[in-house]
Length: 472
Image (tube, rainbow, N blue to C red; front, side, top):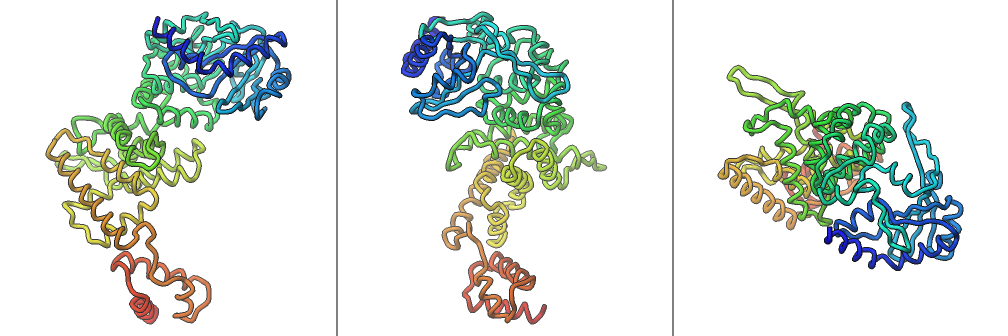
């Protein structure tokens, strides 16, 4: 507990220039102000950030008035929910009026009622570790629901009955899984049971809100813990049904574990390789591709007469399933295209054998991966979960060899920008045609020729083009 107190004191000293001055401004106007929720929790965990959430007795109009002249910029997109946001130097601050909100059983949006007390505001929050506050400028800690003890024990509980909390806002069930993934906490059995019995209520929540929680979970330090909780409580059946479906299948290459456990291991191994990416991690696209890479297996499973199991074309089927699920969750087209492409290509490397691919095949690998090549390297390497050390080392050496060949060809031929050796204007001039379908066909012929044979001189490309056109 002493460590928690020291962490809080250190963090409050760091953010004092913001909270103390704001606290005085609100107090002089006759209003209460308190740092609340995540910033308090994270301060006790020794985690620092510059996004601050505060709660106040002031109504939004009064909050906006008090922020004017202090903040450098103010925005009010959350006014309907009692929130006024602002920026002051490096600090982003949101001040929200004490409130009480609940969901109508058939509504996706909360009814917002402003409250009159800090205690009442804390009581409507999702978990006890988020239901703590520090009054400012006096710095008195308010912890009516034992959040400090729960934080010390690393457990998630709700301030009141979990059934009431999840009925008010069903998205809190997703948040429980997200906090488990972010903090590595366990969940109180009563909360788990409420999630299990009320999972169906998640269906009133908009796809966008579910998506946002899923992204935060997948990008957290311990996504396996959060995903396991979603599966165990039945929530995954409703928000990402492809994941629990994997638990029913046996992986033909890794019979000591089912595809579900294999998938979670691939996710963790992909996380370990994120340092290869220019921006590092967490990287949602790489992680979600790892999570979805085998979702086509349940639909493609076939039992052969000798007792073996095959999953032919599960890469193609899985890519289609991934695209459909991500569209349902309202992901951006860019994310959908990137993840789906990775799922579709994740088996391509296994045709490499011991390095038998021609240069043409390597070029096609690079061309098909496009701007997802580095993520494809990560996914392919992460997909090896064999316990056979020799096999694992052989796969690693083989992929090392492929990457070296890609690097050599890239240096020689600019693989990341493969295009025909003559452009569209030259094609029209050589063939004596105008813009149209024929130019596109010729361009595609020359692109395939470039991939098969490597760089050509303009004269060689022209000769090949004329021969193709004459035989067409």
